[in-house]
Length: 400
Image (tube, rainbow, N blue to C red; front, side, top):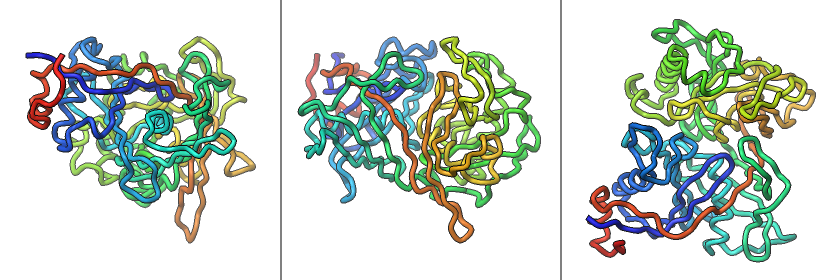
């Protein structure tokens, strides 16, 4: 059979890459989306390289974004995120990607989806993330009628510099479960097969995450992604903790269901500020950081930190009684940005958290990213792999 071609843009957002589609260029029936995204990215691939698609073999490079008109009056665009599994024929819509969120405002402006009245050359785009039903406000500079690309901001994990995009996650609590603290507790004890009883904190801000102390896993907290992936015992323990947490947070009904799904909750471990090396061989000094963290994303050790999880980590650090708060350097200003050390360097995240009537509330979280359009044109998919697309469009799509 011939190949079909779909209009698309390939973009970097923060430390992630994704194919970006206009919603109007995809079938209205979302049941046909999975096969399109899998074919375009190159999954499933037992070799974990995705050489027959646009993916890069790791979770941060195996993503799709869809942008369209807003369905809420307080938004300028709708944005749907799809995490495509590398080795499995699975597409997950349960979580948002903070890194790719940074590219959505510039994409909308550059594509003419949103007309900017740029005071002082600054654009402000209100993004409705349909995965989490949350509003993200993106602020970025304009270069005449297009989003600015060149700038002085360097972010860990990306070579070079770029123009900053400030992302403000408004009321991020309960993005996955409806509650900032899904169990109602700042910490819980889970009984995990193969691990035993272990203290965790389950927090849901931007994306649901379960945190554990590195020391409780017999780790220092500064382990690198390759070392973690090679340690099957630790990977199994973290997978087991995540599965039990998914049930406790009300995300899945059974641990077995959680093991079948690679999205939320994310799982990771934290430790106090300490000297540690980065993937580039540089040394981070304990005095320059407030917290050390490592995360798994879709069953893989992340080479940086998922941005939404970074926000959740910063929120958790401001909630007294969590394992994250206990590991975080004390600060005189409770709303000061938190410097989180991770494999690619130091990430600074602001989180405004308050306690009212005995209940914790996440008011806002913010950080800076850079973005860049890498390619625009058409993405080609084998017609034999997308029968749903062929049927939905009744052959109207162009063949190559």
